[in-house]
Image (tube, rainbow, N blue to C red; front, side, top):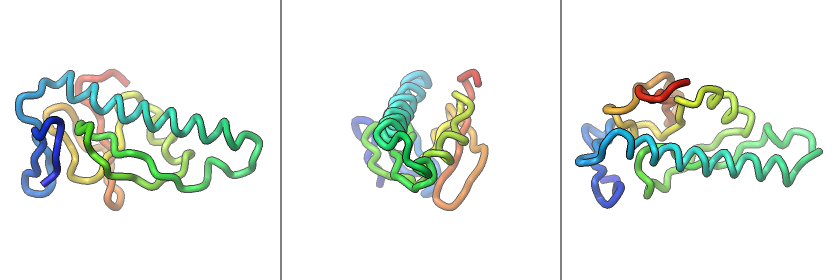
Length: 123
């Protein structure tokens, strides 16, 4: 069982998360918060290691960008990979099975991660 926003998140068939009583805009805002945290982290690392060769090619741990603000799952990617996946503003990287089907669809799956696209967000 995955604890969700105020306990509202539950596993369905071990693949999809359902957020009972949350509107679509709240789900999207929660994911934008996680993405903002990852972008701030990425920017800080690049700034701290400015001038050092290959800093964007070293794997680091990003937070899952799912709708659950309490999610503690991590995704290991290089900064370069993370930035490439986020060229569009409507794309989010989540741990497989953390998808909110009411607001997103899977674009790509790799290992234990899913790249999802928000249905109500412009690219």
